[in-house]
Length: 400
Image (cartoon, rainbow, N blue to C red; front, top):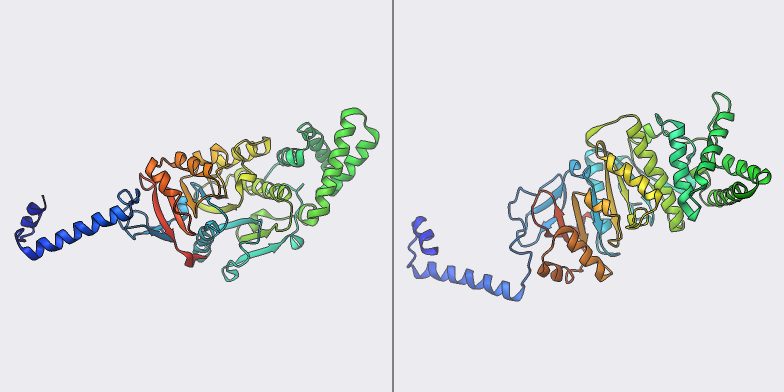
C-alpha cells in the first residue's frame, strides 16, 4: 500500500533514503503508542475547522487543533464538572469574557465564593455585594402576573429550609391579601410585611394553620435577618433593565441553603420575565451561570427543583443559556439529557463520578480507565455535539 502511494506521487519506493524516512516515522509512531497508549489518540478530532468557535477554550490533544464554542451553543446548555482546582472556573471565565468582549448577551452570576470578582468592569460588567443589592422578592418581574409569581415564590419558600409543602397555600393567600390591601400607586408588599402578617395570623388561628403561620413567620424573619434588603426592599429591581447587563451578585459567607434559595429566586425571575413577555429568540440573549448546581438540581430533587427544571427546559426557546457547574455527578438526569456540551476538567474527587460521567457520554472501557489518570488542572474530556466521539482537550490556562 505504501509503495503504491509513493508511485502515485512519482516517488521511487525503492529509494533507500525515502524508505528510511518511512521506517523512522513508523517506528516513532509505534514507540509512542507503546509508551503512551492513550485510547483517545486515534478518535480525537483532526479537522482544524470542525470545532472552532469565537470563544476559544483550548487545544485538542495530539492533533493540536483549536476547540472553541459559539454563543448559539450556549442556548443548548453546558455542564462543567470537576474537582476543586481542576479548572471549572477557568472554563467559565473564558466563556464569560468572550461574551463580554463581543457584547453578545447579558450574564447573570450568583457568585457563591467570589470567584468572579475580577471579571472586566470595562466591558460593562457589574459586581454587586449583597449588602448593596436591593430587591423585593414579592414584586413580580415586569409582565409577570402577580398571582403566577406568588405561586412560584410560595413554592420556593415553602420547600426551603425544610418547611412543609402544606405551607404553600398559606403563603399565597397571605401575599394576595397584602397585595389587595395596598392602595393604588404604592409599592407591593415585602417579605417583612408577610412575616408580620403571619405572626398576626398565628395569634388568632388554631390548630395546623397556627403552627404553619408561626413556623413560616419565624423562618422568613430568620431569612430576612441574613439577606435584608436584598430580599425585602421597597425599591425592587427592573428586570427589563438589569437583563441588559452582565452582573454577578456575591453570596459569599451565606449558608449553602440560603445561597441556593437566593439563586433559585433570581433564576425564576429571569426565566419568567422572558417567558411571560414572550421574548422568544434563537440567539443567546441571557446566560445564567449556576455554580454548585447540584445543590439546586440534585439527582433526587424536591418540588422546588422540579419547578425550576420545568422552566429550564423552556429556556432555550427564549434565548436563555445556562452553564451548570458542579464538583460531582449528583445532578438531575434532566440536566444531562438537555445539555449539548459536557465538560469534565481536572478529574473528580470521587471514583463513582468517573463511572457516572463515562456512562453519560459513552466512553469505552480503556477511555474510562485513562480518564482517571488525567487529573491535572486543565485536562478535560469533552462531549460536543459537533463531533461523534468524546475527545480530550487541554484548557488554555491563560483564560484564567
